[in-house]
Length: 192
Image (cartoon, one colour):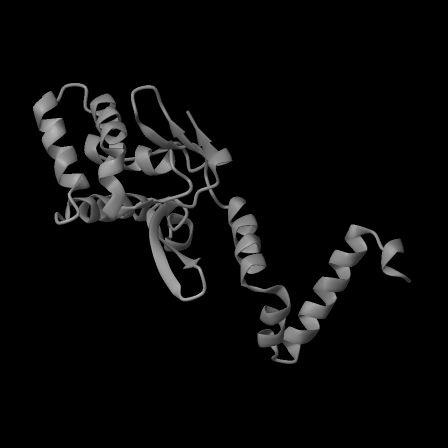
């Protein structure tokens, strides 16, 4: 049967049959080569979507995993502010460039810490955006811990602020890396 007469379901069945054959032959290396890393990551995300919970952010800034029996992710206002900043930037942010997001981070922090003194909030933000201070790493570690208390590491990897490195080329000889921090949770799972 020619490819143009195959339905998408037939093609998927053929791919599955060939994948099982390669797996039985112990040649998952060939399967990986055929699929490719970008496609594999896309498939991983698609598979995980069935196990991921929607993240509802309430008006009073509670973070609730609605599909996990409405479990709340317990975070302090500063952690919520950091999380909201990274959630608002799916393209990612480099820690060394956090000062560029000072005003936005301050707005999030003021919204999540309504009873806190404004000077304390500004002081806290200054620590977070200072590239010589470890405060942002500490906050990201606490956020990771909060999600790991509620789910396994595989699912948590979509909710936490994690590293993503992009390689850039300038002309033919110069290469540099952008070390972005991102939340990989598909944004359609975020409810506000």
